[in-house]
Image 1 (cartoon, rainbow over the protein chains, first blue to last red):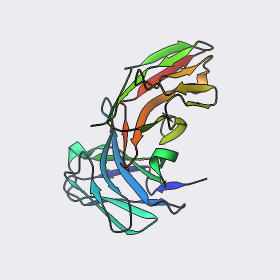
Image 2: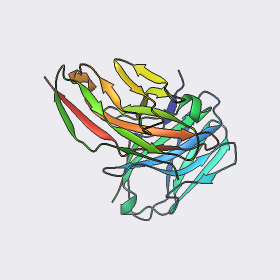
Image 3: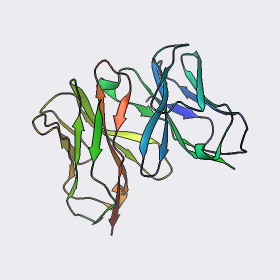
Image 4: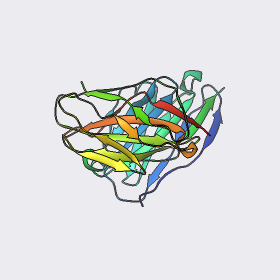
Length: 113
Length: 112
């Protein structure tokens, strides 16, 4: 089974801090994704990557950046955390989304105080 | 652009009741359709999928049929269990686009 591992389940950070959320997958998938999940808003795409060092903005990239130096790792960076970035962050990976769908990690619940 | 609309919840049913969660979509191309399930405190898991019109996806007693004429992919289960309590997401992925579009999610609670 494909496994997508997010480094932290729960994280509490202070306003203004630089925050790194890490995601690692073990099945050599080209495509990796970061979403945030908020009540009533569903899942919103922040960034995705279809290859090493490649990245594409999603629907809500403001305040975020990403890094993909190796195929298996996709990091989400909050440059200066703000309280409105308190959310559940979900990482996913896929070989071919339209054929196989995504495999998700367990999520990181980030609270910014 | 592509989008998914699913029925708002929450939905509360008694054990062994019949479940339907409605999902309709808008897409410019020929999308694949998915249902994901999210149990409390966890990420999303793929429940079932259909990659072309008239396909039926099924898994764990859940079914959904890809209806192109009504642009729908409704989720059904004949007899729900308490363990089916979760949030269900409908989603689509269009060929040529790597990202997936999700509905807002429907929370299902099944009472004994």
